[in-house]
Amino acid sequence: MAVSKDSYAIVFVTTANEEDAAAIGRALVEERLAACANLVGPIRSIYRWRDAVEDASKHLLLIKTRASLFPALQARVKQLHPYEVPEIVAVEIKQGSPQYLDWIRESTAQTRAKLAGRSGSARPRRLPAGG
View 1 (cartoon, rainbow, N blue to C red):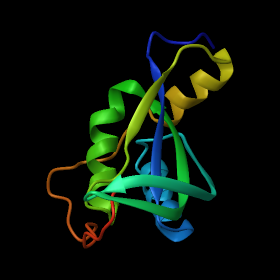
View 2 (cartoon, helix red, strand yellow; view 1 turned 30 degrees about the vertical axis):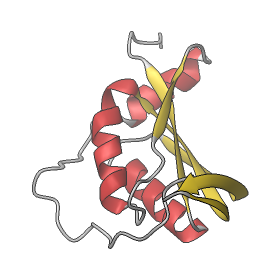
View 3 (cartoon, rainbow, N blue to C red; view 1 turned 180 degrees about the horizontal axis):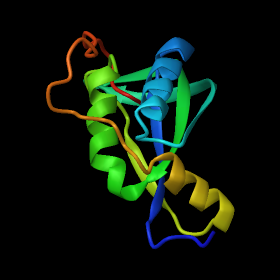
């Protein structure tokens, strides 16, 4: 199978704990907004939030998706994430194994995510930001 002309991205999202990371990653994959979500951690994050320097343990999600799905993926992460300002950063995949990129495309081809009318999935916001 040849790689399509789709572009692909890796999206970085940090969470305060492994449970939040797993819940977000699972939802994105189940809804076909992502082909894969790797959980890495714990990691240490030093960042500025509300004019104070914070130092905290985090978990990092590495999410593989089609670039065209980023707006919907970002909206869904914001809906699921407990942070007021979650880290949601996408970087383009410039090159990759043709078979792997095909797999990302196929795994996200029938996106079922419908952001309008979603209910019950939002979580209360808590601080701090993504870091």
